[in-house]
Image (cartoon, rainbow, N blue to C red):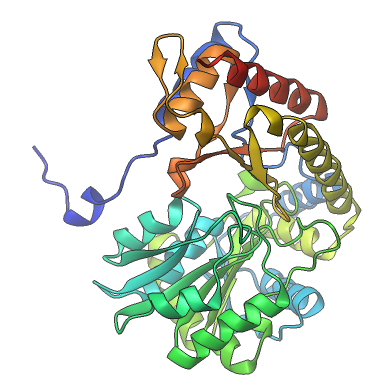
Length: 400
């Protein structure tokens, strides 16, 4: 038998696999499953982006390019960061990666030593702690509250810092909570990071998906000192409905970007060349399709909250999301009740029984560090969303 390394043995399997498999079985059997677990826009990639990929192939742009990215795309990323975020970067500070996950993995690999502590506000995207553990780091969770809108305070961050702290992973807008930190909140957090010389991995993948007049503000904007401590991660997946194209990017100080580019040259070499040409068109081209997508998410979010406000009397509650396309539904008042003969102990039981009873798929909050919730995505049609919420209500009323 092949002996596995300690490194890979520490990685936990996805807790959602069993539920995903069961949902697939129900669909295959002809059941109408409404899926609130979707983590990608339910829109096709805009036509002009698809056309740019076709044009690239027709022109023979099908060869290797530089491992850290196509020069035209790195230039487009620099222009985007200047235009949208008031941040000046040079192309040699940009690394194009195989999706946001790859960019995050690259950043952690470059900064976190064995035993280094990485502060992660909770609830968190489930990949963060697994990547940290893969490189021998130690996740340190900062528990947020419903009252704070699931946002970490500067005081909480200060209390979590130790001599072993290597990095803060900061995500705004946040998956899974939809939390968006204000400029004032981010400046307070940045002051702590500068004081203690803490590197920040700033995941800004959902940057374009903010609501109610909120403005995305990057922690790298705070000051030149904070920018030098920031590895900014973004991509085209969520903003341009390009999840399957697999392209993310990071912006970092020159020495960090150079080291990451060297590492990537051995790990994967360049991102799919065709995808890179398509991404140039995404960043530089017509932004109307993206704006229309945001408008659709805005309408769904409003409708979801309107419906859920009517469910509070039966014990269903939620924390208002300000960004992304997720909502954390608080369901712990139903723990200790039964669905048939099945006792519901936590969010995994709740989600599995919801799927079994009402054919509704949702993501258990325990996956994100908060067992009191399930995560609902509104990246599905308005009609399906409304029907799915009605099924959730029926399920909750059926528990005894």
